[in-house]
Amino acid sequence: MTKAPEEPKLLSGGNPQIAKGYGDGPVQAYIAAMPGWKSGVGRKLDALIVKTVPDVHKAVKWNSPFYGIEGDGWFLSYHCFAKYIKLTFFRGTSLDPVPPVASKTPETRYFHIHEGDDLDKTPLADWIRQASRLPGERM
Image 1 (cartoon, one colour):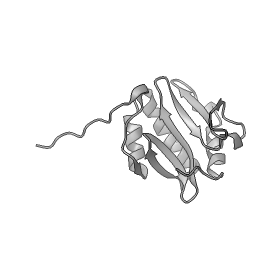
Image 2: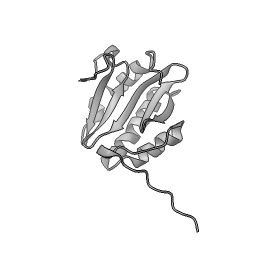
Image 3: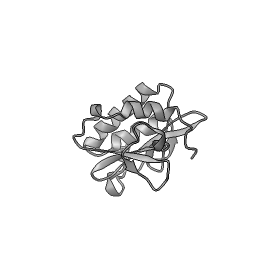
């Protein structure tokens, strides 16, 4: 008798607990485990990132998907919270326009996505394109 795979545990705020891993597989597992409306947004974000940066490299670290350029570090990550998804642009102060939410880390900026937000009315693709061309964060 085979045991069904366990569903990923949701941490406080509803963030999926996914094992650290590199490549598309762990990121897709994270997206599939995102609760409720967030999973659909995760699929849309992932598709937009891949369309905008076709040679993007992916990983899950610290229970969050990371996107970067091989040999140049990570430029974007996101994380689930109870009421929103937080996109992290590691060199966000270099983007134009600068994403709206400040961080304790001087160069980092955040963009929060809430249920029902129209992502087509945001500069997400432009921010992703700009961020992918900047030196990435080494973690």
